[in-house]
Image (tube, rainbow, N blue to C red; front, side, top):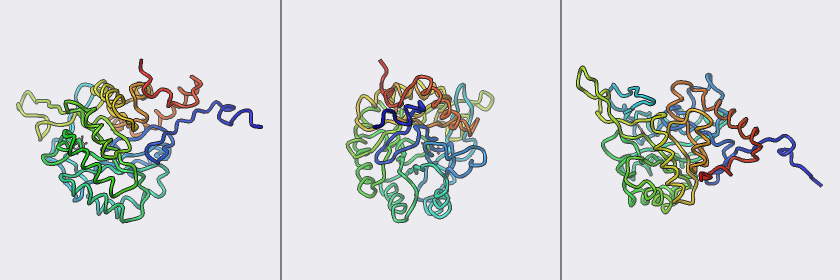
Amino acid sequence: MVLFTMQEILHLTDISVKIGNIRFKNPILTASGTFGYGTEVDKITDVSKLGGIVTKSITLLPREGNPPPRIVETPSGMLNSIGLANIGVDKYIKEKIPLYSTIGTQIIMNIAGSTMDEYSDIVKKVESISSDIVGYEVNISCPNVKKGGMEFGVNCELTQKLTEKLKSITDRPLIVKLSPNVTDIAAIAQSAEEGGADAISAINTVVGMSIDLQTRKSNVSTKFSGLSGPAIRPIGIASVYRVFQSVNIPVIGIGGITNSKDVIEYMLAGALAVQIGTTNFRNPGIAVSIIDDLVSYSEQNNYNTLTDLVGAVL
Ligand code: DHB
């Protein structure tokens, strides 16, 4: 007869989480656009400890992105308008995907397009090869391109149709990444769920602008850009809370997380997992330290699992 499980004897907390049919060893992922293709930082930090890595957005064709300046610091955050600079799906398949077989963590491929066909062509190409990608994050919330991106993310019908279309060509989990720049984020989340999304990630950047007093020009070449970092955390928390109340699929919280307390705050609001973004630019090892802190926190509180905290805000 087994009286105690190993976990009880050692007081270990199981911090793994399941999204779609994929189990992640912990709820800490790195956010798209802040961790390259996942293959650049393995000398700086132990990426195998991460719950997962979300790649920068991949488009059908390679993109140079927007002209500089495309990043500027702001109080407690930064503005960016990169414009989806990336190597394109063909080069991604040839040069990056093969490196994932030994990376030791789960890779979620973030995809972006300006038409539904562009999104689906990317997924078809990846599905036609054997790869270690565990799922897709569908970026319908890029504020920095003229066509596509946020056009989908502000429209319930397009969000549902795009999700349905992609769902019909892959069995891998689809995570739909939402924009906070909408009137009703919960309605968009419900449309993604109706389209078959396996999870929602929220939030992407908040549209912002800052101006140089000398030149009287925007500090970023495209005028408007996306605000990220601790400045947007309360917006992320409110959005996750709203989405969690309106859907039955997992919510992944993003926006301004810099430490394990921020992770717990997102969990209380309704996040099952989180993504660490802007703070990676200060310290690419921060996500791994957050995981260590989360484990200590759970053990100090004698939690067997963190999932009891999800949506537990009073
Ligand atoms: C970019 C910015 C985003 O917030 C995003 O979701 C995708 C891409 C960018 O400018 O490249």
